[in-house]
Length: 116
Image (cartoon, rainbow, N blue to C red; front, side, top):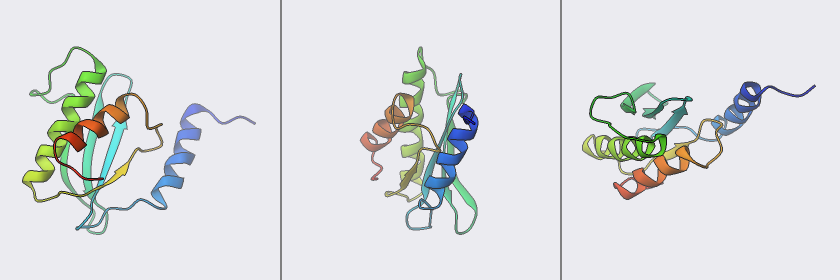
């Protein structure tokens, strides 16, 4: 029996999360992509703490296209991370392909100063 799109993504997500974890020294940048918005948070999994979070729904994130929104979210999350003392992270694509808006967000975060 074929998996639904959501079940397939969930299976990929669990496979990724077995390997990718966030520590205090190297937290995890988790990306969630809905049809309309994109969300990013930096998480320390050891302590169970979210260090920073940004979404395309925030007031200061204004864009015409979804890709522009992803780029501005990536830039904003990197700025928040650097402000809170985080420079290197592990990237958690959350079961999505590293393509499109997820890739745009990651590239914008790299350009703004995050290393991963």
